[in-house]
Length: 421
Picture 1: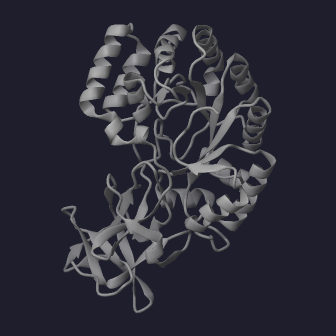
Picture 2: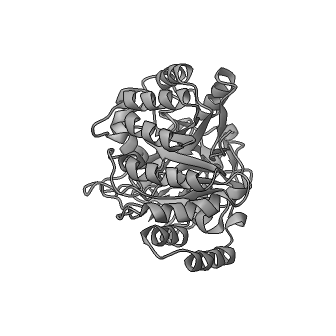
Picture 3: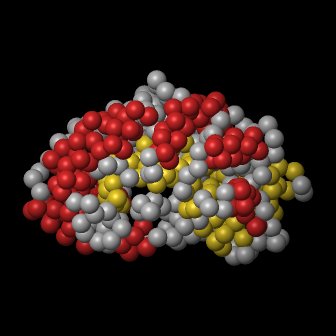
């Protein structure tokens, strides 16, 4: 395949899954509005990326300066293409496509634009972090199997260990695998309940959503003793060890605050090593304070936006609002915790000028240590329908990163949680 112009070329997928370019069509991309793909926004498809066919969606490209939807090639119906990026990368542009009548909702992936450029597939992405403990090499299959067998011998069988084994093997979750391998951040999933109905929830989708949950949510509260038996040896292992409550396979951990607080107190009665961390929607400040009193050291707060309406449209909170989240961030800062934001990024929303203004106000009034950019896994049409497309021209995700570095130079940008301090 050869590209006839210097601009990235549009690509399409055949029914057999093969991906080809359309040399006469310049690639298009969606950054809140559809535009000609700029080669500077694309990098060679990162190793570990997953190419995705977008069923029922025709690729959009540019020919003679006009946007054209390509439905068929040589009499064969074709579909648009996207990429799901590996850990350590952040998406900068969405795929441009035209949704055909009867197209199914897209599964929960983070869809990045793909184009053919300089003899290879490229994706609209940036390398935004690297941490060896989050690489495939640190989670080798034979080592994991041996570690699982070892933990089975050491610990009594219980719902926590069973859930972690399932997450480690079936879902490939690194934090679950770390609980067996005893390095880095280890998961302790606790809460089956949640007070939000996130559009992109990976563990419990609404019955009428039309998409399957990527994981099955934990259904049994683990015993305090089981959490302690898992946490103490992990924290006393290697330097920088961390245990974290609040995982993708559970609801909101603050709803299980009394049980988590009891576990933290017992862990700290046995060891002062490592970091005790919480991944949370930060919806219940009083519950967070209970965990801080027990010995919590670090939190990562999930949010998609600093504008209340945009936040609520995605999280669909029950019994709380963005103001409660901000109160929790303020409380954590007052009590000396390490604070990260788990920012669910989406081109056309995150880099919307109005959103940038709101985010700047939030960070200026409530300083944090780190912003972790996470590509939001959701059907772009579903998300835009919920939160709306931008009314002003977005600045672009690459410029958003530049803006963050210039405006908040002390805030670390990346993708992975680091240890306390």
